[in-house]
Length: 200
Image (cartoon, rainbow, N blue to C red; front, top):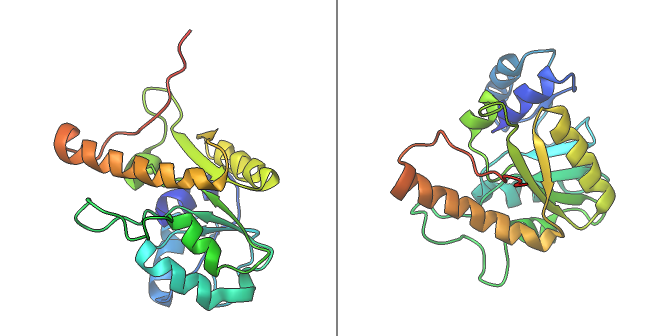
């Protein structure tokens, strides 16, 4: 997902900075993204205002805790899905969801928007399907932050679809479970996308 989103962002003219615990992987990804993508030191404050949390949910809480106040004032885009490897249950408590767990550990003035979690990386990188832009569902409590993320998504040639407040991230995480169920039991491959068709 880092390569897919970073690649689309670079093509759209955005400045892209890649960070990883493994500096060699960060350099390789920056080269793959191209268009002047740079690397930053893991744990240092990101240069950009929008930070894509392109790590597995199993690692994201530790990453956010490690960065701590260095993420203060940033707009964090949570793309994670807290789903166990058996695709049956969630890693989060029953009364919570992934984005909320991240919100519990992020700096007080960082803002979280859920986005991109219902897209497959290869499909996302490939772009429009049948001439239709891919839908990216978003959720968040800050309307200005959602507007910024929507503008970013639109600049990538994708269609932002606002689903409401951050609590809707729980539904979006379940939508990923739906995607996994379709992939496993019905479609049998990953070359598809969940989208909204407007009728009439």
